[in-house]
Length: 135
Image (cartoon, rainbow, N blue to C red; front, top):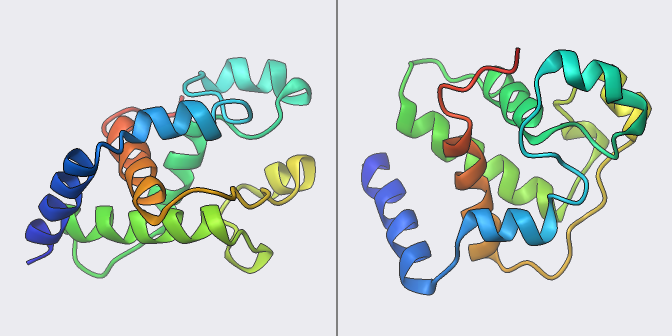
């Protein structure tokens, strides 16, 4: 069932022409660098505006826990969290490392994005960093 929901989400994104990577580049990339090694991040930490997106994806994947390992369910829950958090960031739902919160604060709401754009970028973040380790 969830595979069907995920497939429908991807198909609707394709039909509506919403490209998650384009949403990322336009709305997220100015703060969240797409990919960076952990050692490089530590060297440049004081100059960053926000954690690199690879670190964000890694933290969320570690912290969104489900009882049974089911990739489709995990991906869907990840998308729901990111889609909501983009519009409604809140200290109560932060999953970043405490040092990141102390350094960068809480992300500002990204206004003007449609639900489809938020869904597309959330799926893009999940899929982009699939099998990519933040080392």
